[in-house]
Amino acid sequence: FEGMKYSDDPAEMRKWCPLMMEGRDPKDKVALTFSEEGTDVDFGALTKDLGKAFMKLGGNLLLFHTVTGLKKESSGKWLLTVRKNDLGAKTCQVRSRFVFCGAGGWALLLLQKSGIPEIRGFMGFPISGEFLVCQNPVVVDKHPAKVYGKAAIGAPPMSVPHLDKRIIGGKHMLLFGPFAGFSPRYLKTGSLLDLLKSVRLHNLIPAAAAGLQNLDLTVYLVKQLLATDSAKFAELKNFVPTAQPQDWLLVTAGQRVQIMK
Image 1 (cartoon, rainbow, N blue to C red):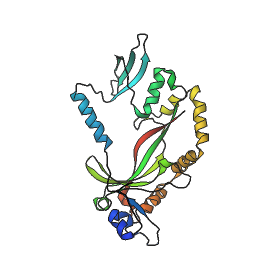
Image 2: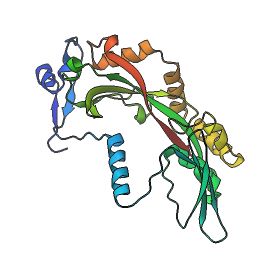
Image 3: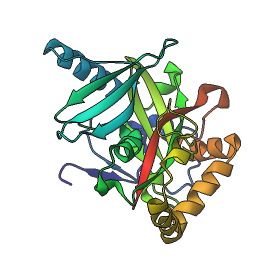
Image 4: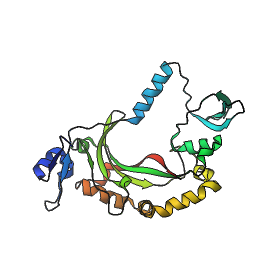
Protein backbone atom coordinates (compact mmCIF):
# COMPACT_ATOMS: atom_id res chain seq x y z
CA PHE A 1 0.00 0.00 0.00
CA GLU A 2 3.03 2.27 -0.23
CA GLY A 3 2.23 5.50 -2.03
CA MET A 4 -1.51 5.31 -1.45
CA LYS A 5 -3.23 8.43 -0.11
CA TYR A 6 -6.42 8.72 1.93
CA SER A 7 -8.63 11.79 2.15
CA ASP A 8 -12.11 12.86 3.19
CA ASP A 9 -11.40 16.48 2.28
CA PRO A 10 -13.82 17.58 -0.50
CA ALA A 11 -11.23 19.95 -2.00
CA GLU A 12 -8.62 17.18 -2.26
CA MET A 13 -11.09 14.64 -3.64
CA ARG A 14 -12.27 17.20 -6.21
CA LYS A 15 -8.71 17.20 -7.61
CA TRP A 16 -8.73 13.40 -7.89
CA CYS A 17 -12.20 12.93 -9.44
CA PRO A 18 -13.94 16.23 -10.19
CA LEU A 19 -16.93 14.62 -11.90
CA MET A 20 -17.86 12.62 -8.82
CA MET A 21 -17.65 15.62 -6.49
CA GLU A 22 -19.49 18.06 -8.77
CA GLY A 23 -22.98 18.79 -7.46
CA ARG A 24 -22.59 16.46 -4.48
CA ASP A 25 -24.45 17.27 -1.27
CA PRO A 26 -21.91 18.59 1.28
CA LYS A 27 -23.63 16.43 3.90
CA ASP A 28 -22.69 13.23 2.03
CA LYS A 29 -20.03 11.27 3.88
CA VAL A 30 -17.39 10.48 1.27
CA ALA A 31 -13.79 9.28 1.53
CA LEU A 32 -11.34 8.10 -1.11
CA THR A 33 -8.11 6.15 -1.25
CA PHE A 34 -5.95 7.32 -4.16
CA SER A 35 -3.04 5.75 -6.03
CA GLU A 36 -1.23 7.48 -8.88
CA GLU A 37 -0.23 4.17 -10.45
CA GLY A 38 -2.67 2.34 -12.71
CA THR A 39 -3.11 0.72 -16.09
CA ASP A 40 -5.75 0.46 -18.79
CA VAL A 41 -5.78 -2.54 -21.14
CA ASP A 42 -7.84 -2.70 -24.33
CA PHE A 43 -8.14 -6.47 -24.59
CA GLY A 44 -9.77 -6.21 -28.01
CA ALA A 45 -6.71 -4.40 -29.37
CA LEU A 46 -4.42 -6.83 -27.53
CA THR A 47 -6.17 -9.82 -29.12
CA LYS A 48 -5.80 -8.32 -32.60
CA ASP A 49 -2.08 -7.69 -32.03
CA LEU A 50 -1.56 -11.27 -30.81
CA GLY A 51 -3.32 -12.58 -33.91
CA LYS A 52 -1.16 -10.47 -36.21
CA ALA A 53 2.02 -11.61 -34.44
CA PHE A 54 0.93 -15.24 -34.74
CA MET A 55 0.36 -14.90 -38.49
CA LYS A 56 3.72 -13.15 -38.98
CA LEU A 57 5.36 -16.22 -37.45
CA GLY A 58 3.64 -18.41 -40.05
CA GLY A 59 0.50 -19.32 -38.13
CA ASN A 60 -2.84 -19.86 -39.88
CA LEU A 61 -5.63 -17.95 -38.14
CA LEU A 62 -9.15 -18.94 -39.21
CA LEU A 63 -11.77 -16.34 -38.39
CA PHE A 64 -15.53 -16.96 -38.67
CA HIS A 65 -15.05 -20.70 -38.19
CA THR A 66 -16.62 -22.95 -35.54
CA VAL A 67 -15.25 -26.22 -34.20
CA THR A 68 -18.26 -28.55 -34.23
CA GLY A 69 -16.49 -31.82 -33.42
CA LEU A 70 -13.55 -32.89 -31.24
CA LYS A 71 -12.68 -36.58 -30.95
CA LYS A 72 -9.59 -38.52 -29.92
CA GLU A 73 -8.65 -41.28 -32.37
CA SER A 74 -7.12 -44.65 -31.52
CA SER A 75 -3.76 -43.34 -32.72
CA GLY A 76 -3.80 -40.75 -29.95
CA LYS A 77 -4.30 -37.82 -32.32
CA TRP A 78 -7.25 -35.48 -32.19
CA LEU A 79 -9.72 -35.10 -35.05
CA LEU A 80 -11.44 -31.72 -35.28
CA THR A 81 -14.43 -30.95 -37.46
CA VAL A 82 -14.55 -27.27 -38.42
CA ARG A 83 -17.46 -25.43 -40.06
CA LYS A 84 -17.08 -22.17 -41.93
CA ASN A 85 -19.67 -19.60 -40.80
CA ASP A 86 -20.91 -18.42 -44.18
CA LEU A 87 -23.79 -19.29 -46.50
CA GLY A 88 -21.80 -22.19 -47.92
CA ALA A 89 -21.33 -23.69 -44.45
CA LYS A 90 -18.50 -25.88 -45.75
CA THR A 91 -16.78 -28.19 -43.28
CA CYS A 92 -13.28 -29.58 -43.08
CA GLN A 93 -11.37 -31.83 -40.71
CA VAL A 94 -8.02 -31.27 -39.05
CA ARG A 95 -5.79 -33.79 -37.25
CA SER A 96 -3.41 -32.71 -34.52
CA ARG A 97 -1.27 -34.21 -31.76
CA PHE A 98 -2.34 -31.47 -29.38
CA VAL A 99 -5.41 -29.22 -29.05
CA PHE A 100 -5.36 -26.15 -26.84
CA CYS A 101 -8.94 -25.27 -25.96
CA GLY A 102 -9.10 -21.56 -25.20
CA ALA A 103 -12.67 -20.75 -26.24
CA GLY A 104 -13.83 -18.94 -23.10
CA GLY A 105 -17.17 -20.19 -21.82
CA TRP A 106 -17.68 -22.18 -25.02
CA ALA A 107 -14.74 -24.37 -24.00
CA LEU A 108 -17.18 -26.35 -21.82
CA LEU A 109 -19.09 -27.58 -24.87
CA LEU A 110 -15.88 -28.42 -26.73
CA LEU A 111 -14.47 -30.38 -23.80
CA GLN A 112 -17.75 -32.28 -23.51
CA LYS A 113 -17.42 -33.20 -27.19
CA SER A 114 -13.89 -34.45 -26.53
CA GLY A 115 -15.15 -37.14 -24.17
CA ILE A 116 -12.35 -36.67 -21.63
CA PRO A 117 -13.37 -37.99 -18.17
CA GLU A 118 -12.14 -34.84 -16.39
CA ILE A 119 -15.09 -32.83 -17.73
CA ARG A 120 -17.66 -34.92 -15.86
CA GLY A 121 -19.57 -32.94 -13.25
CA PHE A 122 -18.77 -29.55 -14.74
CA MET A 123 -21.61 -27.15 -15.58
CA GLY A 124 -21.57 -23.57 -16.75
CA PHE A 125 -24.05 -20.77 -15.98
CA PRO A 126 -23.86 -17.85 -18.45
CA ILE A 127 -23.99 -14.27 -17.18
CA SER A 128 -23.81 -11.22 -19.39
CA GLY A 129 -22.25 -7.98 -18.17
CA GLU A 130 -23.89 -4.62 -18.80
CA PHE A 131 -22.39 -1.16 -18.38
CA LEU A 132 -23.63 2.40 -18.66
CA VAL A 133 -21.35 4.14 -21.18
CA CYS A 134 -20.74 7.85 -21.68
CA GLN A 135 -18.91 9.21 -24.74
CA ASN A 136 -19.67 12.90 -24.22
CA PRO A 137 -16.18 14.47 -24.16
CA VAL A 138 -17.30 17.27 -21.83
CA VAL A 139 -18.26 14.68 -19.22
CA VAL A 140 -15.44 12.22 -19.93
CA ASP A 141 -12.71 14.83 -19.45
CA LYS A 142 -13.87 15.42 -15.86
CA HIS A 143 -13.04 11.89 -14.72
CA PRO A 144 -9.39 10.85 -15.30
CA ALA A 145 -9.53 7.85 -12.97
CA LYS A 146 -10.94 4.43 -12.12
CA VAL A 147 -12.99 4.53 -8.93
CA TYR A 148 -14.27 1.42 -7.14
CA GLY A 149 -17.01 1.60 -4.53
CA LYS A 150 -18.27 -1.02 -2.10
CA ALA A 151 -20.62 -3.89 -2.86
CA ALA A 152 -24.09 -3.61 -1.38
CA ILE A 153 -24.78 -5.56 1.82
CA GLY A 154 -25.30 -9.22 0.92
CA ALA A 155 -24.05 -8.76 -2.65
CA PRO A 156 -21.12 -10.87 -3.97
CA PRO A 157 -17.67 -9.31 -4.54
CA MET A 158 -18.16 -9.45 -8.33
CA SER A 159 -20.88 -6.78 -7.97
CA VAL A 160 -18.54 -4.00 -6.74
CA PRO A 161 -19.63 -0.86 -8.66
CA HIS A 162 -16.96 1.15 -10.42
CA LEU A 163 -16.69 4.21 -12.64
CA ASP A 164 -13.80 3.87 -15.09
CA LYS A 165 -12.11 6.11 -17.60
CA ARG A 166 -11.36 3.82 -20.55
CA ILE A 167 -9.76 4.14 -23.99
CA ILE A 168 -11.37 1.67 -26.39
CA GLY A 169 -10.50 1.71 -30.07
CA GLY A 170 -8.69 4.99 -29.47
CA LYS A 171 -11.83 6.66 -28.12
CA HIS A 172 -12.04 8.03 -24.57
CA MET A 173 -15.17 7.06 -22.63
CA LEU A 174 -16.57 6.35 -19.18
CA LEU A 175 -18.01 3.00 -18.07
CA PHE A 176 -20.14 2.45 -14.99
CA GLY A 177 -21.25 -0.93 -13.71
CA PRO A 178 -21.34 -3.83 -13.78
CA PHE A 179 -24.97 -4.85 -14.03
CA ALA A 180 -25.75 -8.51 -14.48
CA GLY A 181 -27.89 -9.71 -17.38
CA PHE A 182 -28.82 -13.13 -18.64
CA SER A 183 -28.48 -14.90 -21.95
CA PRO A 184 -28.31 -18.69 -22.48
CA ARG A 185 -25.41 -18.14 -24.88
CA TYR A 186 -21.90 -19.21 -23.84
CA LEU A 187 -20.39 -16.60 -26.15
CA LYS A 188 -21.70 -13.13 -26.97
CA THR A 189 -22.42 -14.38 -30.51
CA GLY A 190 -23.20 -17.96 -29.51
CA SER A 191 -26.37 -20.01 -29.83
CA LEU A 192 -29.48 -19.62 -27.69
CA LEU A 193 -29.22 -23.38 -27.16
CA ASP A 194 -25.72 -23.34 -25.60
CA LEU A 195 -26.93 -23.73 -22.00
CA LEU A 196 -29.38 -26.49 -22.92
CA LYS A 197 -26.74 -28.37 -24.94
CA SER A 198 -24.39 -28.46 -21.94
CA VAL A 199 -26.84 -30.22 -19.62
CA ARG A 200 -25.84 -33.79 -18.72
CA LEU A 201 -27.01 -36.20 -16.04
CA HIS A 202 -23.61 -35.96 -14.34
CA ASN A 203 -23.70 -32.14 -13.99
CA LEU A 204 -27.30 -31.53 -12.90
CA ILE A 205 -26.70 -32.27 -9.20
CA PRO A 206 -23.51 -30.14 -8.94
CA ALA A 207 -25.34 -27.25 -10.64
CA ALA A 208 -28.30 -27.48 -8.25
CA ALA A 209 -25.98 -27.74 -5.24
CA ALA A 210 -24.01 -24.68 -6.36
CA GLY A 211 -27.22 -22.66 -6.56
CA LEU A 212 -28.32 -23.71 -3.07
CA GLN A 213 -24.89 -23.06 -1.55
CA ASN A 214 -24.71 -19.58 -3.08
CA LEU A 215 -28.17 -18.21 -2.40
CA ASP A 216 -26.81 -14.67 -1.96
CA LEU A 217 -25.46 -14.76 -5.50
CA THR A 218 -28.70 -16.26 -6.82
CA VAL A 219 -30.79 -13.56 -5.13
CA TYR A 220 -28.42 -10.86 -6.42
CA LEU A 221 -28.72 -12.12 -10.00
CA VAL A 222 -32.52 -12.22 -9.82
CA LYS A 223 -32.63 -8.65 -8.49
CA GLN A 224 -30.27 -7.51 -11.22
CA LEU A 225 -32.39 -9.11 -13.93
CA LEU A 226 -35.51 -7.40 -12.57
CA ALA A 227 -33.83 -3.98 -12.22
CA THR A 228 -35.22 -1.26 -14.49
CA ASP A 229 -33.14 1.24 -16.47
CA SER A 230 -34.18 3.96 -14.02
CA ALA A 231 -32.91 1.86 -11.09
CA LYS A 232 -29.56 1.38 -12.83
CA PHE A 233 -29.34 5.10 -13.53
CA ALA A 234 -30.07 5.80 -9.86
CA GLU A 235 -27.00 3.72 -8.95
CA LEU A 236 -24.94 5.82 -11.34
CA LYS A 237 -26.19 8.99 -9.62
CA ASN A 238 -24.54 7.80 -6.41
CA PHE A 239 -21.22 8.15 -8.25
CA VAL A 240 -22.09 11.03 -10.58
CA PRO A 241 -24.67 13.36 -8.96
CA THR A 242 -24.92 15.54 -12.10
CA ALA A 243 -25.39 12.64 -14.55
CA GLN A 244 -27.89 13.26 -17.36
CA PRO A 245 -29.76 10.32 -18.96
CA GLN A 246 -29.06 11.56 -22.50
CA ASP A 247 -25.29 11.20 -21.91
CA TRP A 248 -25.40 7.51 -20.92
CA LEU A 249 -26.18 4.38 -22.92
CA LEU A 250 -26.68 0.86 -21.51
CA VAL A 251 -24.61 -1.68 -23.45
CA THR A 252 -23.88 -5.38 -23.11
CA ALA A 253 -20.13 -5.53 -22.65
CA GLY A 254 -19.60 -9.27 -22.89
CA GLN A 255 -20.53 -12.75 -21.80
CA ARG A 256 -18.98 -14.81 -19.04
CA VAL A 257 -19.67 -18.36 -17.90
CA GLN A 258 -19.58 -19.22 -14.21
CA ILE A 259 -18.19 -22.74 -13.89
CA MET A 260 -19.85 -25.00 -11.32
CA LYS A 261 -18.68 -28.39 -10.09
